[in-house]
Length: 481
Image (cartoon, rainbow, N blue to C red):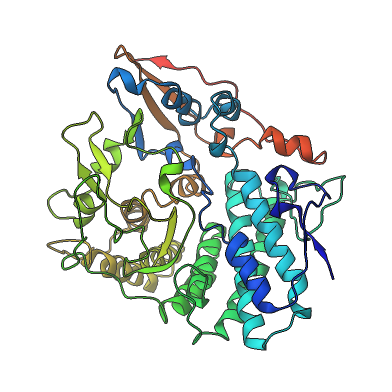
């Protein structure tokens, strides 16, 4: 059967029933190669902008030559402007506004694999593996889409079934009339269905080595724990973390771990976002440098984040960020190697996901879970601090705050913070911007602001007549300090 898939040719056709190529896989191996080559998108930067929407960054004043068109165009994103895409397009920065199309291109590839795999030639073990990977990837991509372009699952004063989500594209061919937005609840239901089936299939292939560039059963259970964390289904979080930890790498003890090179600009490839870091479960995406970064721009790592670390006791402060004495931004990002991927799933997240689930159950009155949360947090911190002092359980509020702080310290700039702020209740964020004369102005994202859901790109609206734009905030005006 010839399968038509427009996404293999042009992102702009990702919601049209138009085919420029015909692809006719016959074997499971061919489907796996399609997944490896297109489905994973190993050289694709999926999310180039959300890191600079958070409180982990702040504006800075640079030398005059840093006030160039590229860096000035970043302001529209950094200040949460409703027309951020137009500003980027005007400056020909198209790679920063293609996330929506990129995710659907990958989803369409997953759909092709899911639809055709049963009739392909191959062993049952091969089919289990490829199907499990395709389902897990589709779940991952829908999870990203619904968290970038819709309001959070736990939005206060409403329910997920009342919130517009994203189109649920579950077939390899899309009709001209397009697909309307499913609710947030419906999108999450599909994500759960996909990831649960992926876990079941990949659990059957535990002994099959696939490496860190493909999803195995540990990675699938990690993703499931993340999904259920956002849904506040605490028991399912705990269930999937337990299953993942049975096969996950051990936490890396930073007291004895050595990065091979800490000197800028060498940045050798055994950093934390690296295939060589011992905790890595899955790594993917294109180079971080393809997004808006905190070096060589007018945006830097915020003092608000850096001040949370115990600078004399926490290895993460010195290993994640290296002091920069000869440029205007204070630190360069030592967390990434220069030629490594965009994002990574690590064992540390499993402990943090489970600790938060335990803390939530403790807050709900199940007293035994408070100490369990403390034990998970201490297991992580013992491997991060030079002089470790265990966290002592007190109130439920203090415990949850401690969970959130540890999550921020550990997972900063790994594409978690923006999504975490959304599920924490969408707090107000203030971003300073300093112009080339030294004038400092403030842009504000209000509490529960519509800007917590990114605008859907106009190109997607033009192609899909059934798609409706998000509620957009008015253009944000800076206040001079």
